[in-house]
Image (cartoon, rainbow, N blue to C red; front, side, top):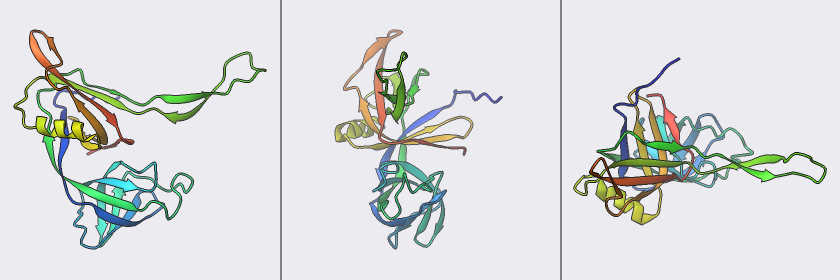
Length: 217
């Protein structure tokens, strides 16, 4: 059994993006390989946001593990199922996250509520017990409470992400070197959200746009 201490966990918001690059093809493979426009500038280790005709891929973040001219390998992204990812329909765009800004002064009671299964009631008249069938998974929500400080450098980015109503990148850096990446809708309180232990607190809540991904290093 391995237990990871949470002390030292860091949380970042994507603060700068590169320009969108056309993704002219993407393979049904594990891991997926995307073909980008020439002079795309993407290199190994970059984190990119994916806009795709494949609903299960659209809005996800992924790390680039290999680059061969215009072919870019998306680490940890499995698109091998042609039922989930119909061949030839996954094209779109990608854009690189070029800078992150740390969300400072966070308190320890951060929570992530993984989306729970949503069930359809399939009980028939003959059934003596209720029956349900899982049909989808609910959205993942995250709460990042902390100490209120409008002068912090990250506040402007969090406010901009809140006002935009569009997905903005999240990175969580764990002490064991694992890193979680997700595209999320951000919501930061307009002012102090409360008082605890005689100190002003703020509240950041996020709802993930698409499935997150965690890398071991």
